[in-house]
Image 1 (tube, rainbow, N blue to C red):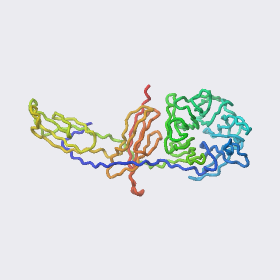
Image 2: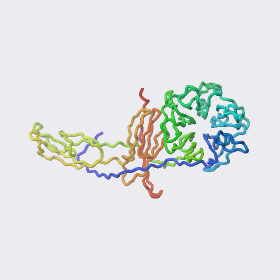
Image 3: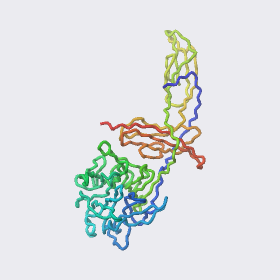
Amino acid sequence: MKNRLVIIILTIFLTRITGQAQEVYSFERAPFSTRAYDEYAPVYYQDGLIFSANKRMDMLRKIDGNKGKPPWNIFVVSQTGESEWGRVDLLSDNLRSLTYEGPVTINQGQDLIYFNRNHEAGNRKMRSKVGIFSAEFINGEWTNIQPFEHNDPLYNFFHPTLSHDGNMLFFASDLRGGYGGFDLYVCTRSGTTWSEPFNLGPNVNTSGNDIYPVIHPDGRLYFSSNRHPGIGGYDIFYTEEVNGEWVEPVNVGEPFNSRRNDASLISNNDYTHGFFTSNRDRISNNIFEFKLTAPTFEECKLQEENNYCYTFFETGTMDIDTTSFMYEWRIGQHDRIRAKEADYCFPGPGDYVVQLNVIDLLTGEILVNQAYHELTIEDIEQVYITSPDTVLAGQEINFNGTRTYLKNFNVDRYYWDMGDYTRTSNPELDHRFTRPGIYTVKLGVTNDADNPEELQKACSFKRIIVLPPSE
């Protein structure tokens, strides 16, 4: 819709808006985690976590290869307060061996566990391959240990993770016919049996190692890779199954990923709190805890689009002989429109001069200056998201917040919520949505307040339509 203008007098005050990247999550080594030994693969369990560690237990000999470290076992720790944790204990003596007890996954009823161990678990002199085993929680103890039906003593089956409904079991394996060293596979439950391992395909698996899968309740599969484009050695990625195909993985980026190795990310349903494994401190592999610390924006308004298009006309014009004379609008220094009424779109906000003249068609000279307007155009005062409105799933697009215009508000920090649990704080970002749908993208900003009482916040949202990828 165009603006109809007779005489407009507007003022504009433009400020240069600068953004400072600010973390939206806090990260720290979990209180129960120690640099004295390595810890891997946290999993939610009851009111705490289960994880795998090479923690020294009583007088077991150090037999972990050339590193001289204790064997890996499965441990449990309970959270006793907001930031307090209890003692780290073995999960069960029944799930302990002389060699390797690795990462675990547990069903929703928390009475069925899948875990890694060597095929020859009782023989510490034999470095056998690692398989997946299961155990049931019966009468207060983990028992009835059974090998996974597709275990193969010639190959490793690492890092099991069970889907929320318990019907899919993902794992990493060096099975023959894969794309790299270790690939990601899935087996689907049918009654009491599991389908043959299915390779997730070349979108996910690379010529390197793709390991430590973790399936979130929303269906997003997180894993670690040393071949997909990343930041450090092993980076955390996620993929999703769309129309029966696992799509190209997305790097979760910094600060989840570091220059070192990062893996095994777990989180609550809305990704505001969770844990992952990292050796970013260069001493040992530890479990890190993250929390969402970005401010909340209670009032987030639907973004309005700026309109720079006008219809110019002058109420005092007279009918003239158009064979000899013509009305001409002069807009700025260069644009000319010969008409009594003119439609024109300005390139953006700014100060403009608009004149209406009567032109002698024979000489081209100005016969009469009919009207003269000084026009100031300003943006709507709001947080502004610059991006396409409609995109394809998997298409990388740019989101930019630097066109935000707020009077008496010096924007210091930008906080993005992309509607798919991606959150960041840069003034702009490149992002791709993996699934078709309608996403509500929010951008909140804060000022450079010296104290909490002076903090100002503003927020806008924009809906992005994501279409299925083109064939």
